[in-house]
Length: 309
Picture 1: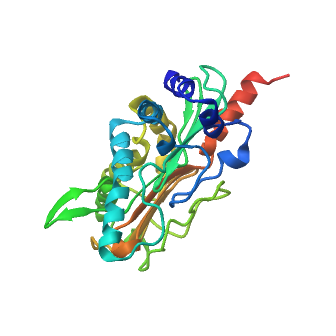
Picture 2 (picture 1 turned 90 degrees about the vertical axis):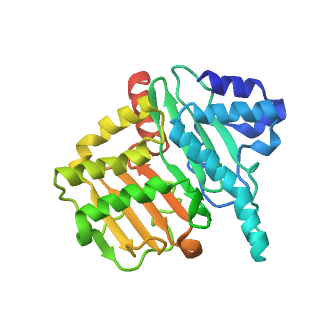
């Protein structure tokens, strides 16, 4: 990707040392978390204005307009959360700072050899692996705190609204059979596991009529279409055979504004969502894949094609 090469070319030697890691550094490449904390990589706050613009271009190069809007809105919530905690006298000693989002490039951006990047900070964790036109996009985590900012009865911002609304449409269609527990877990069950040996299970609905099937596909698309249209289209084509095997499970209340959780699990696909913290105004929503996480399939294909002896 030319944007990644332009970004790296703009950096000083010291900045490049912070921003770059070998692609073979599996431990660092699979390290991820979604809470505020220091991270490896080059922080937006340690870049100049033009460098920050290029860093955002690197990320936006793989995102749809919708995905980019969500990421920027989530980063902007850092100011809002800081203001809320200050007004409530409830500052938690955690950094609420939109400059503390980090870009890490793994390997050398190339048109044919594999490379990867991670863009990560509070409630954003994007992991992209590239080999030519083969692009893997998971784990893909977005969160929002607060999930909704209101002015009276009107909504000012709600970055992950469709992750909730489209799931509620599916729940309304399939009914109580999807509800596996009256209690929602405190977080997504897989959290920040570096690898998934198996997907969560424990009941739910897997038999959908045609209308429900369309609603299910709409919900899968909410996660996949965070990526730009050509990437999302290929991914939906890859996932479409799994739709007959996906299980939809809901836990917690079905009332808006109350604690709730859901997941979609297929043979390799996982979408997991919770809104339980801070009086059910704090969302975590992740897309993962047993085969694609951290570019596993892309790298396997590279080895099979280019390293056959």
